[in-house]
Image (cartoon, rainbow, N blue to C red; front, side, top):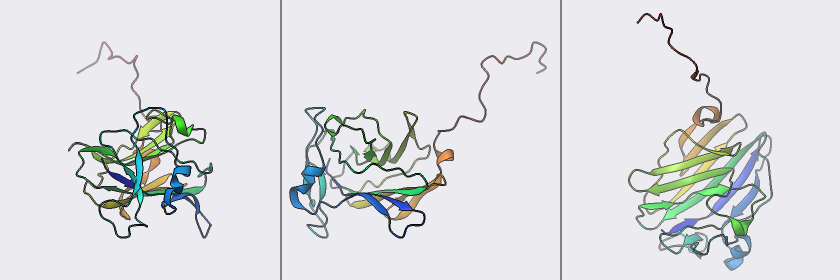
Length: 221
């Protein structure tokens, strides 16, 4: 799997003229990214990321991103930024992904972790707050994951959002607003939107079965 990932994470204040950007990574300073992105040592066989603009690009320098260098490998490379709260603010998570080969199984998603994460110990079961991005695994799974952690439980969106499965660069955007609405965009076009309460099973059901309920003996069919 070959994957290029530049990242942008920001908060848009309701009355602010400019957003507060907590993470903006364009990989324009040569090898400087290796000081910001720390390889996890939790497993000895994690794949290695390299900096590359890929086999094709618009601008060789500006289009550089992190590229997976080994097939059939898992990757863990977190970067730390200032802790924040999106209370009463709009949260925007945005990044680009390019699968340069016709992959049949590979994830291009990102995760936002709590600030207590030990970067060198990050692994697939590390607790995260948000997981977002494309995932391809055979013809049956070509989706955009949108997962939130709610009270220690990872809750998946109950809608099926199809991801792009070609070899070109695509921009994935998640917008979460303080009124509990959200929007998912691919290449700046809306592909899904709605309410967090409706599209994630985070609230208790309005009706539940009574395990002690039984049909009366004199029930008339």
